[in-house]
Image (cartoon, rainbow, N blue to C red; front, top):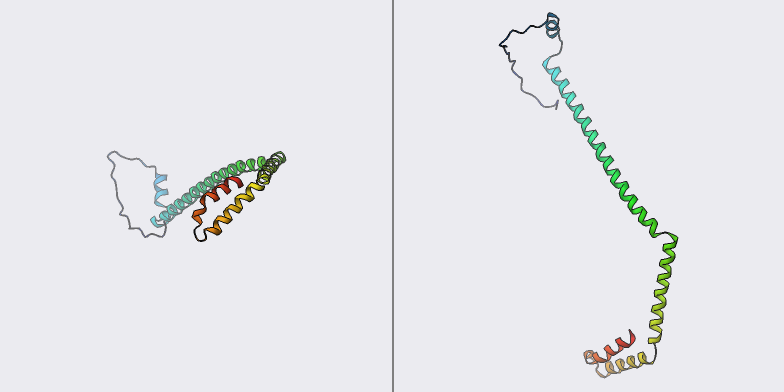
Length: 150
């Protein structure tokens, strides 16, 4: 603000329509001031710069406070969910459900590994050997094997 060169302003004199009474003390004080237009302008520029810097710092501080509040709120929400997931009861329950599912998968696959699966597998291999280069001819055998195995 203080770096910009300004055009010199013309001194304007306004004549009032009614008489103005100024005390001699005020008039002598105004006449005896040592400030020039340039120094007054510098003081005004400095004052404006300080005000702008102050308001900028205030807004920056408000923005940081809002950001911290939002961040802390988000962290608290996430932290609460993690604590619930990591509680010992929840972990025990999850382990129990996973072991139960694993046991079901093992029981489902063990009976299938019997004679029916072996017969279906041998039929697929015989068909693929007989129709070498044409695996699509063995589609029915492959589908039967899928039903038995899965």
